[in-house]
Length: 53
Image (cartoon, rainbow, N blue to C red; front, top):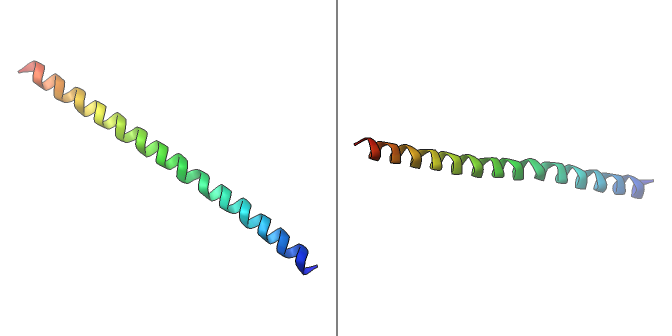
């Protein structure tokens, strides 16, 4: 009985860890995309300022 509970507990812990890891990866990807888009936008703004002068 105790062994079965331990097995169930271990599998539940593994499932929880897998679910916890996924949002971190998605957040990291979103952060990288945001940084890239911001930098390209700022670069375009600089180019527009240079052309106007």
